[in-house]
Image 1 (tube, helix red, strand yellow):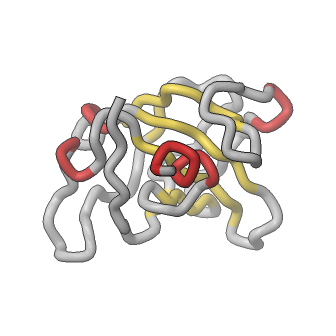
Image 2 (spheres, helix red, strand yellow):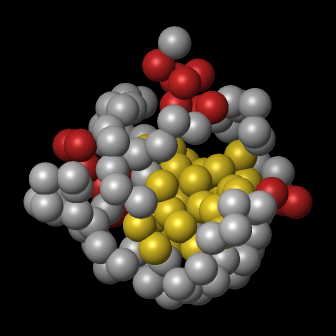
Length: 118
């Protein structure tokens, strides 16, 4: 497993997802330089967060960078704990997310990313 910390502009969900979804769609996959992101930008495991526009709800997840340029990005794990645990999924932390209201941060400093890099 390798993880490369990469800063990415916040994205929006292109389609709503349910709490049991295994994939998600983004409105774009462009980096700060305007170029499309690739798996090489992230390594073999990426970490990210969904949050609502009010900033009152959040879900942490891991995802497969090999799918970043696909129609849908594949989750590896959802509902991760808020303490940096990279393997434990918490059912109550898996949420339904709404297109247009949900911000997706792929290049964010989740506690999981900090755990992997230290």
